[in-house]
Image (cartoon, rainbow, N blue to C red; front, side, top):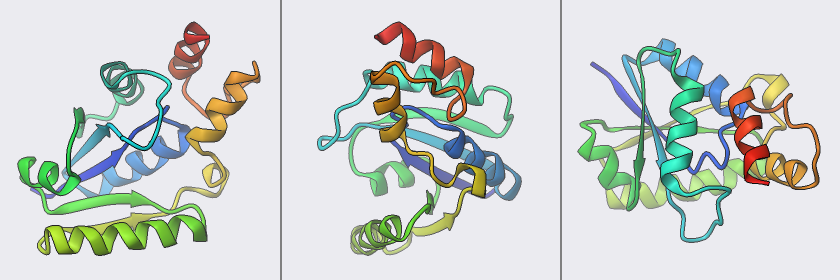
Length: 157
């Protein structure tokens, strides 16, 4: 059984994230969406709330599990019995950053491989950062996120 771990802060989960997860669910037997903490990012909600929202958004995909984690991704991947990390690439800037992560992860855990998927064209411009900014100014984010996320973001205002 092939398991892939798709990590992120999901700050919030967007339609672009869901697009990658849906496609990964057709490729792998099990997809673990790993909602993580980041010491470098501030988040719209605490970890447990982001996990809860992500679970609701992905509840209809049977071979997807959502869990929170705090720590090194390579340690988490091993704990899940996997050796595969899924990452999304939208831009050249993403590639440069992701390439650095791959190199670091290879030093930490040479047996773990990283696989990249690009989002569909209609989702390629969506980022959680832009969604949060639009929401902060009272803009309509419904084209970029699930109705569940729209409701949560409105409640947090």
